Image (cartoon, rainbow, N blue to C red):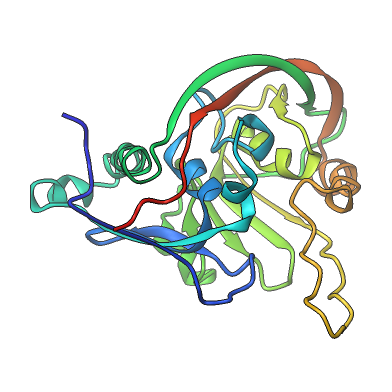
Length: 269
């Protein structure tokens, strides 16, 4: 019997919020999202088979434009009493959430997908010759991290993320090098595969330079650059080499793809 939410409400977001003003996460009895595209829901519902936190945009094949960024949704979902005890178990909740989200997307968007592996341009993340600027994870819990970073939240895995006090500052807690590669992939514009040989989990921080605010015009302001635009790709070497003490080597390698076989616009509640 597939796991499903007991109640689901999905509506197109009409708040007028900026694209970066989105939120998504679990609640004590379910799941809530605001101002998110279908792409973000997909990334929460499906996780690569090995090593990665989520599928990058370029690892999702066949996604229509409206599902990538244009149309945004608000979601409220609740689990049934039958599942509420398991839902509150941190060891069970992540897989339950993904299963329920997959069922929700299949029901409301008629989504059908399959996975396949393709050889694509990649970067290999290596330790280089120096000493990596990484801190071994000390086992801090999410509640302990939130004492210093109130906006910290759990990633699509065991690690945690907290935006720093400075714009563009990124802090991660308890992530593996494979997960770091996934995070860097968004900046690099291609998959980053771990070849560091570093085991265990680490705390990692780096600073991303953000674009200047758009000039005031009479029309609508231009959209911010996408995560894998040239603006951000130009920073990847500075971040990996200068801030993390690691190296990138260009090459080709296997990457798991999530292929969209079918998807429709949202069906009514």
